[in-house]
Amino acid sequence: MEFINDTLIIIPARGGSKGLPGKNIKKLMGKPLIYYTIDAARGVSRDENICVSTDDKNIIHFVEEYGLKVPFIRPAELASDSADTWSVVLHALDFYEKAGKKYNRVCLLQPTSPLRNEDHIKECLQLWNQDTEMIVSVKKSKRASVICSENEKGFLSLTLNKEAKRRQDIPDYFEYNGAIYLIDVKALKTKPVKEFTKIRKYVMSESDSADIDNIFDFKLCELILAGK
Image 1: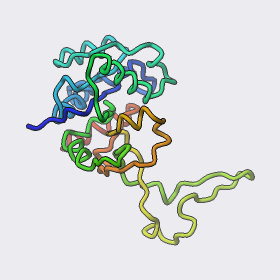
Image 2: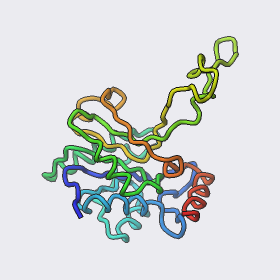
Image 3: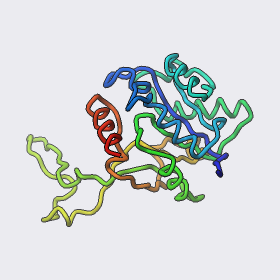
């Protein structure tokens, strides 16, 4: 099997979760949630290039019990509710660079996307070229036809489909699904992600895009996995 060596895979797994406490190690179909993402990462890279960034000792225990060494404990200032994901990524890159290992790309895999697998990551990698700042996984939006905003008088108006008379006439819109972010390291060090202009999409299905934020999402993933 051919593995990627120029890409650092980062799995961010903060201990605190208000929507579903302990969700990163909560067992989904008998398997800790974070293991699904570790398995996906191991399908494309060696353990030395996979970094679980966490502040939580229980998560560290589960990850290392699965045979993956956690290289550091995330600093407290990067583990709060207000901590920026990209600061977490830059912290991990800095750790590896100080250890003499430099990477050209980062692949961010959130553990709350258990139905994203190694095939999705491989397909995403195949879309990469030198002009790309980021490839992000998305799903086709079902909300485009009904998204609306409220004006100063309190009345609603449709936002994206003001002219379309039929739903099928509305152009395709996409939503970030949070499953895969493939990022150029030079670009990330130069400017914040919100200023990226060379972003490509990798489209995933509605079911594979499942993102766990609460118990409803968790139960939905159980049903999808049971069906598969």
